[in-house]
Image 1 (tube, protein in one colour):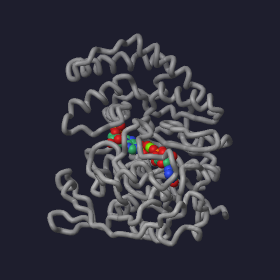
Image 2 (cartoon, helix red, strand yellow):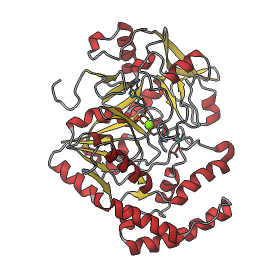
Image 3 (cartoon, rainbow, N blue to C red):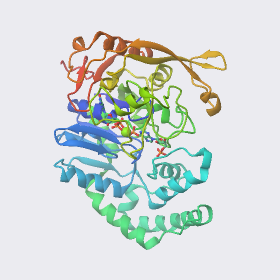
Length: 440
Ligand code: GDP
Ligand code: IMO
Ligand code: MG
């Protein structure tokens, strides 16, 4: 059976965790394939509200295997805290597997993440400060430490010694920070490794065998396509290798690209972004900004503040130009449109259909920051519905103007909207087609 990838079609936080939690019921494996602790995926279910950074959102379905794949960078401290939190709240992690090939976030990565942002000044990216970026830099620089290394104490001691010599020179000379102590890190990380040992496996072999048996595999993307190193708004992007876009799904879990048969694009009904970088449809002040950020008219308690850092998210109208672009980059076959409820209070809703740059109408975002900042969105205005939609479960029960809005978004993306999310909870959705071929 083919694999399904769930990706974010904007700048992250589209509701991927929520969508994966919904679709997990039809799959036997749910796996993260990219990014690190920078991701923050919110799931709301009968046990309460959860923010997951590393553990796949399938963990709430007791009979599923959840995998943290080879493409992820793992902060052992953060992962152990996440496992402990889940266990305390009654969620079993007995079926969690961690790839031996995944890279490890080390103490210098967190320090460098913050120090580097300060050093960049005007070029700062607004990272999550979790050390994820620097861990990927070391992976690419071939200086990374992998989970397998942690479990082999001799290898770890040797690698740590030489890597730390290198990193301490960087920390002291470039960043003006005190050096890190070898023995302290050695002890701490060996202890982390021993606590994680029961979960560590050859997940590549595991997934390949499951695929050969015909099992359904759900690959949970992190971030969004506009934060991707290659396809995003560079340099205001994340550093994940493999990419968070659908093509990275195969590499980050150890399957061939032909194993991927479906790509679910998760799109928020409007646009949000955390951190710096261009965002043509951003609303920087006024009532519309307040309404979008606070989710006025939608489910209470779901205001737009970062799951990982708590930062207020920048908000703006749906960008049809970028949505079309990311749909094509990912080969989106099905759309999950989230937070439709958050638009319910608006009398009129705008969508961006093109940009104007220096008097010229264009259908792509210019490549440089200065040019992108001059891109003025060309808007089309649609009527709002001004009606609570959080209890709607059938398309026919949605107000006409809400249905028109969904159809308009479908036209930009060029793939059917099969799921409309009207609230953060698992069943708060209108599902019009079951993408796994299971009848509704
Ligand atoms: P992810 O990183 O893509 O998994 O998304 P986040 O969890 O960071 O952010 C999505 C936010 O929207 C979370 O607070 C979710 O609980 C919330 N959410 C998801 N779907 C809906 C929805 O349909 N309506 C509302 N009101 N909130 C939603
Ligand atoms: P999920 O999976 C939103 C953003 C950061 C910053 C840039 C680089 O929850 O959608 P990094 O720490 O990765 O070096 O920061 O990328 N960013 C995210 N924004 N959601 C995410 O993940 C993000 N992961 C990284 O805010 O602008
Ligand atoms: Mg998030």
